[in-house]
Length: 330
Image (cartoon, rainbow, N blue to C red; front, side, top):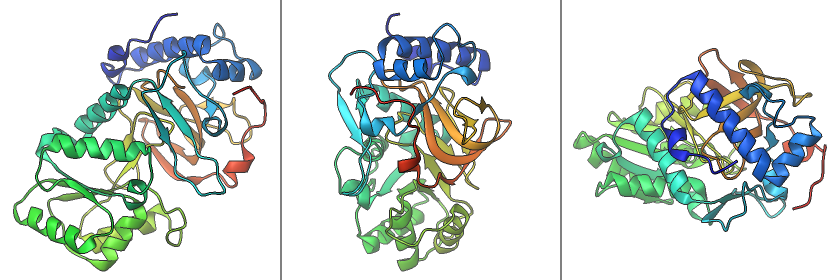
């Protein structure tokens, strides 16, 4: 099978038949050209010919990105995204064949949910991500900052007073602003500089990593809405192993762009998958054309009838619990 038509992926609408067709084509392409994924499929008893619907497509455990080279076709990566971690953990590595594919995905998704980037001032409060290399989130926000072309767009590390002054200036001008931040950074800022934001959307990207006491999403959002004077906290759902993001405009309910979909699987049986309900989340990301588009995450949540989903937390001991069905060569 030849190369995937990426333009076709991004031209998808919310049409289930077209999405299903694109999923099946992508699956067959990756089964044929991704040795790690093919071996996983074979050992789960699934062949390229036996899959008829997206629900039947095997999902690769996300932990494989920590231990194997997950690549479809043989290529020299344009860039490599790495997850955050500690000295005791193994980081995920996502080999990206063409970084333009990632750029196309996040720009189109942002436009779908928030309109023209040039209408916004983009402010990034991502201290922990800025302090390490190869963060896909930093790459995304950096490009949004550039495309906004606003003189006050930019990154902040720990300069909370300067950030507060910038936001007040933007508020006075009535400028639409997106403050996108790692969770602990936003909590620290809201605590130190409580204020009322009327023209600013506050978006959290997750990320406590032991920096503060673990809180539920509802607790985090309550603290931030009260501290920053907004009606709702927006959220971004993405990960190192994906090239697409889902967004929530409040209450932690995420919506995918048309080339991305979340399914749900049983915790004990990785082959028991359905489109709605509670369980472990599986992500289909068609932008992942040259790694793996079918990812079994370690996130627990619920998928609703309209395709939106919530993330409730992480599977306990997910790092050590993973599936031990096979050991394949790197």
